[in-house]
Image (tube, rainbow, N blue to C red; front, top):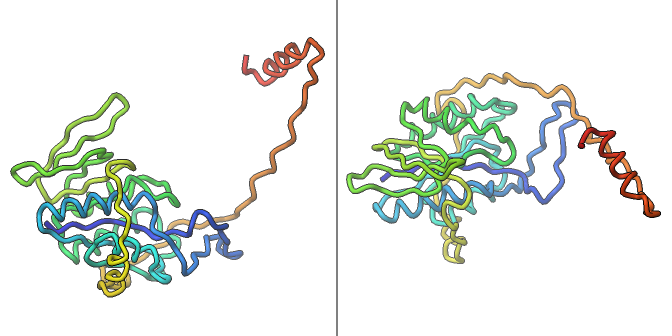
Length: 253
């Protein structure tokens, strides 16, 4: 089974972000990490590939940097990576992102596409569904469990507010997984060393048949106002009355 996993490199959430003073876009450093939500998709792909003697290809759209995040996923066991790095894609919306990812996936060939539900630096939550539409395949979303049926179809347990639904589809198909669907493995020392020699194809827009169109701009970025100091109520035996009055004033009660 040929499995493509959509992954994303993002700036380390533990470090402060810098903004370009002219465009207001985040300045992406060379050191980027793998989006934590994508680790679950990579692990699901690896388990399915092991069960079917298949392959796992990472597909990403972002500045390459030093490929730290991509190497993290390769060290887990993925076979290769395809990253679309093109300056003209800066400021792309979700649809352009989906077109780029779909073009790269179609170029590689696939039986199954796995993605997270959304990235932690974008939170649009619509890119996987757009990719499925562009690839003309079914989309099985919010999977909390993924397995293969006896006939080779993909079966998931879709998380819902009331429990879960069991949904099944023949391949090719796209599946989005939730955090906690599996326990991602930690890269071994051997895996880290092997990741350095695994193939990473760097492509541009033309290689995936996409003409970039920047449809969004950031007009301004303002800092969050500092939180105002609260009021300390001295309890003289009637402190509760002051608190009730405050709650009434803000219409909590």
